[in-house]
Structures are given as structure tokens and as C-alpha cells.
Length: 116
Image (cartoon, rainbow, N blue to C red; front, side, top):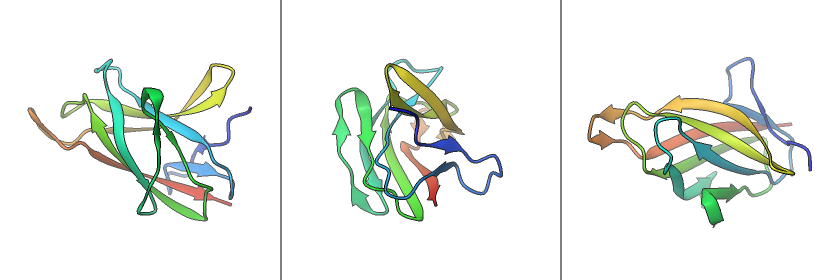
């Protein structure tokens, strides 16, 4: 299976995709080997969390808001949104920084996905 998502070079959205695709995403952090997703919503609807903190997205609509609740992160950590493409292939889609003061990390992170 080939990768279905890509970084948006224009910066208008975090990620670009194709309507109807159902990609699987997850997070990585250079600062935390235990960073994972504990809950997720896509356009306000809960999506399943698979083993390893993988998130199986519902069919992509034109504009998608992916909200993730993270565990194992600290304020200042970089979080990489990754796609699982199959055959052990992954691709980095977007990187964001965990907000908050030390010891008070905000575990909620949102990403925008535009599909055409």
C-alpha cells in the first residue's frame, strides 16, 4: 500500500490527502520514546485507536480536523505526525511543538487535513 497523505508545502493545511481515503496515522517524538495517542476525533467523531497508538481515520472529507490526546509528552517536545504506509514504510507529515509550561504540558494537539 502506498502512502496516501503528504505534507502541505503551502502551509495552509498540515496535511493533504484524497477524499474517501482511510489512512492510518500515529505520532513520534525525538524527546519521548513513550509518546503515544490515547484518544482521537476526526471532525468531532471519535476514531479508533489501534495497537501501538495507531489512529485509523474515517474516509476523508474535504476538510478534516484531527484532534489527538497525547500521553508521554512534555512541554517543548516536538511531535511528528506520521503515516503508516504499509510494508514497514512510514512518512512524516507534520511537526508541532507541545505547548504549556514545564510539568504542565497540553496533551491536546490538532492537525488539519485537506482532501480533494
